[in-house]
Image 1 (tube, helix red, strand yellow):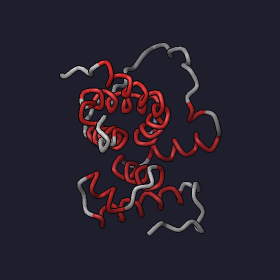
Image 2 (cartoon, helix red, strand yellow):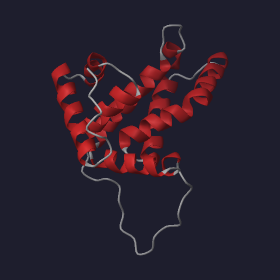
Image 3 (cartoon, rainbow, N blue to C red):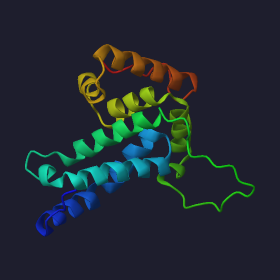
Image 4 (tube, helix red, strand yellow):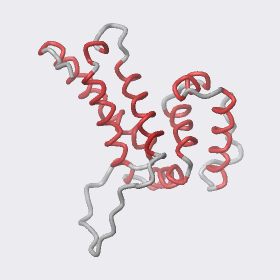
Length: 173
């Protein structure tokens, strides 16, 4: 692993300080869970640290790189059988309140997002939160544009079935 030079380190620290909350929110939406979102964010930021010599260039686009690492990590996580749950006799103390628990609507959104298959959740987050076009999502995920459209359609149908969206909300072209 190549270490960051002292001058470059300031740029990395500035990037993390300025974008950390947005990156964690993106991860939380991808994972359907605030804590798992932080894990995805950390994985993306570690990868960015390792590649900062390239990303700090004027055309480096570090946030796009971090998001791509996070999307790939989220897609890999769905393939794992073990989810890290450990049964215990006593429940642990309640942790700090995450940003998703601050409002009833966000709690509903996270609950519905958790029930979606990972591939549909990732497509929704990229399309409507990251504001990517269908072709950009297809390129990021390495799938056909038609697959992006069908996953978006199925995910929005699931949101409508849960009452989160009204029938008047139209899918974006």
